Picture 1: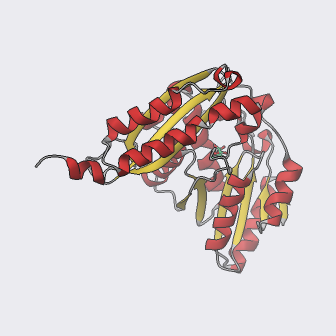
Picture 2: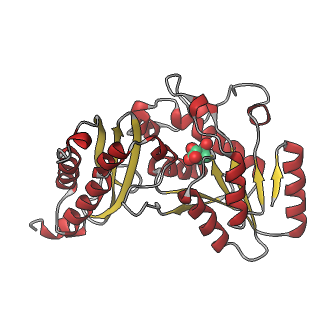
Length: 299
Ligand code: PAF
């Protein structure tokens, strides 16, 4: 696996790949890699032909951190990240510094995510998605890949990236990859490492809420009822007093259309929620099927 640090090295990689005519794919990360990222690499690799080139980027993007969010505390584990993606078959890694990505400092031109960027995560993190879309647009331009893989775990991010690619006619295919969960059901996230044992126990209400929402949908609940069932799961006070003492702040629990618009009366929708557990912001979501609810409606 080639490890590239500069724009010149990246350009050389692009020239070599173009000369070989190999199809290309990218997985973008901020490092601190876990099995969820591993799955992005695995799926990308699986979908590429044998001669395909898979590049992984590792860059903690300052633009997507708010003033009150501690950029310096973000875990940095580059050596083990490189070992992981190499073991999974990535053929190149691009690990730029801030100066390489933003040679003129903070860019004057920023991608505006539009109204969808102000909802849900955008309410608590107003600058976040503009920072994400700006760095993703830059990476797409710098890498010139045929496809880029993003996790469904960050469903709003994935939706906004698809929107940007569509709105701006960027010549790349965006491929979603299903969420990976630990055996206890918690969706994998770099932030899970901040949870104490008791906080993690409390956080298990999140996959339980997702599961309960999906089950309610299967038995005919409508969007509002699904939200209610999931909320009740999150609010249930655990038996264990140490777990019950963990502070929990439910940010939102919503059922939306797959494009984050109003949920449809019938068909596929998304149950999306965010809960801050003991100071750690945890996101989760899953597909819910509203067909059973529609079937119950009169007329
Ligand atoms: O999902 C992430 O890790 C980041 O938001 C991304 C897409 C790599 C942009 O910095």
